[in-house]
Length: 344
Ligand SMILES: C=CC1=C(C)c2cc3[nH]c(cc4nc(cc5[nH]c(cc1n2)c(C)c5CCC(=O)O)C(CCC(=O)O)=C4C)c(C)c3C=C
Ligand SMILES: [Fe+2]
Image (tube, rainbow, N blue to C red; front, side):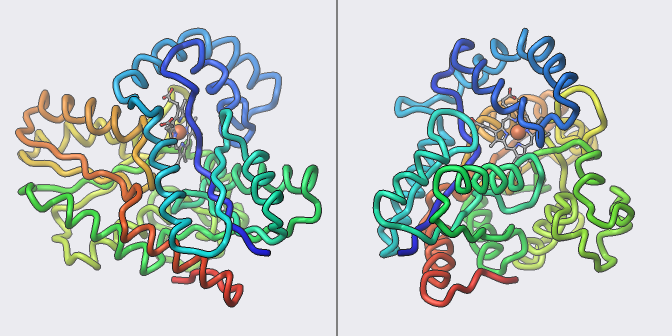
């Protein structure tokens, strides 16, 4: 029997430093997130970052936490529950980090007699620190504990036309009551080094956009290419004015250079250029989370208005919108019926 495994990133158990610490430990000790050798990673993560970050992150989580729990978890659960009403197949939800494990979710499918699983990493774009780590972890768990299960993985859907339509619809809905001078597409950042590491040709990606229009196999695993493609496709779908749209990268950690332009610098630049009314969309995330609700909706608003901006709107992620659930249902049901996976 076929079944669906949805996997998102995961959250701490509660917005306290005590619970944030083990979550961050698991997250940042992932070799695809902090990609240095194990000894150095141990020193960096356990010796330096985890000494102060849990307290700071817990404060941020406390600002956005809901009565039902972490927004990312609650919204992913709502999406999963809705998807179940659109398909005959069993659907399970797991998280890459934290207590809602991929193993438990696979066990749930296994107990229902599922032996063919469609893995759906809940990320539109490929990055070794998001999509790839989910795929590798799920394959490891499957090989070790569920060798009888056959896994198929949904490819990144950053340029799929149904996804682009659903994302565009969410922007149109979000802008119903908001006049804007500019729309900023703010994507989660990654270190530039990760772009080079994920380039199978080892020479294609220049990280300056000069390579994105030259066809290459590197684009299959290039986060930068894929996010800019999403922006371009949404721009075309909605007929947005070229001069009123731009992309940027948020949530960087200190250290190596991360993808630019940085979102916080863009807030300042746009305000100083006289863009008084700013809408921000965060398409690297399908569910709202700490990075959208705190960093963008709260901090971003403060940064933009302090720099001279007048009105600001964070457009929510697609979350469990009927349109988005229907798109996912069409993909998983097509896979169930014919084995086909979504294309462009
Ligand atoms: C697009 C998806 C994501 C990529 C790519 C990604 C890369 C990445 N993230 C960190 C460090 C942190 N990210 C944190 C939170 C966080 N990150 C994503 C998604 C991607 N990260 C999400 C959805 C969230 C929110 C989770 C939630 O519970 O709501 C955090 C934790 C919070 C904090 O302390 O700031 C860290 C740390 C790195 C280093 C990285 C790539 C190398
Ligand atoms: Fe992150």
